Image 1: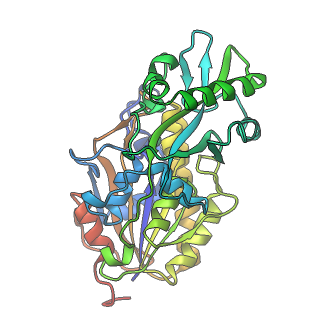
Image 2: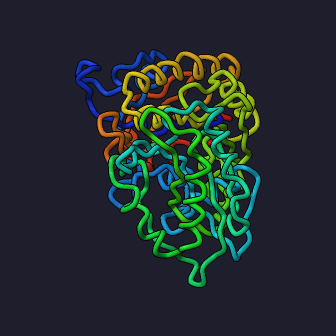
Length: 379
Ligand SMILES: [Zn+2]
């Protein structure tokens, strides 16, 4: 029997007054998740107390990576997701398109106020600014910046922009400017190129952070008793992680990595993959994005939609019994917009077949054991 890990990024949250003191997950309508929950409804923290609550580490852990092999190199994985690689003497920054207010404060960690088309145009205006820096557009506000690797392979720590909205850009980027005058000059040129996009009291700028180098990861099957793993998703970090682990990766062209993604296309891909892979991961990024925008209602609506569109459709299309775990990777608070290390909902059971007697999954280890269990006995 194959297993489906339905991973809703940032699923954990806190009760919100405007949702009648329910979390977005509690406020959402999810009859199919509830059916799974009759078999196992629990919660756990994937990052526990030893990981930063970020997708790369938490999802890597759910895919079986031991702590010492967890990716430190998010931007590098995002390069892989786009089918690019870097040389050993290069390193790569994530490089958000951010909004900055008139006082020079970070107004948004993304290109808030710009449409998707405008964000792509803004990114294009930063191409070929300086031959020492390769600027790569990923999607929406997400970009990468490839630079020459420093001798020690390190670089300055720049605070993640989504954790520091409202703070002064000059102070946030000070370590980076001091470390590399050439990069500071590049950012200044980019800011000038982006001036035509200014509006509503904000201008736009590039914000490099999360520097990374080339890193190889152990394969999914070597970590999971020879099981073949596949993933459907859109968020670059998750696609890159799966590619680096040698998993089959499907990225529906109509998926977006946000709440407007093509849920049916992901369901079709997941149902196809369940027919030939042992463990299939379906990743949905929109819940995390909605929570970063402090929009608990949109997060709840997205969760409802995943139940009624993704799961309902995947069940009818695949038809045979499969194990399922519905869970999140970490908390993303719709009140603060920040990630947290607290528990996330975990539902598990069998669908399209006889339900299992009630059981509990109390940790990420239990989730992994459940996904790998009984292979070959019933399947
Ligand atoms: Zn997030």
